[in-house]
Image (tube, rainbow, N blue to C red; front, side):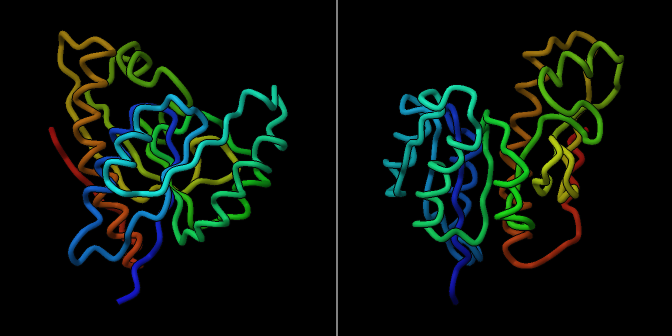
Length: 200
């Protein structure tokens, strides 16, 4: 069986990347082909290397605010790796529509809210401020609009009375590590039914 090739983009410690990589064994329809970061100091790079996965770094800083110039460099190691699927896993750069269009229908992202609620940043603080009873995370296809593509899966966690943004984030992260691998397996196998996890 020929496995789907998966490139994973990170900016930090790479905990979601690790959960994805460690799930791609046995009868899983995909295998990791590259871990790519915009930061040379990202802790996830060492974790990828320790697992024998090729890594690459494309620093966004030399390009100033020129997203196009950054993405022109970012795409080079991606094209060399020939991924079938790209997973954004804590990649903290907003990608342009032109870049996303090149991987339309093949790029996934995990976002720490129950989309369409709370696109963007500070999702847990915003959920608490709104008095929500439930929070969670979503995996979606990436489109040109931020945190806006078709939803491929969601995991729901309860919001507790004494929650802080940090405690809620920690509980959601546990489910991110369950949901993202489950969605990737399903997506790589060509299944379109959303993966739903209720951890309440």
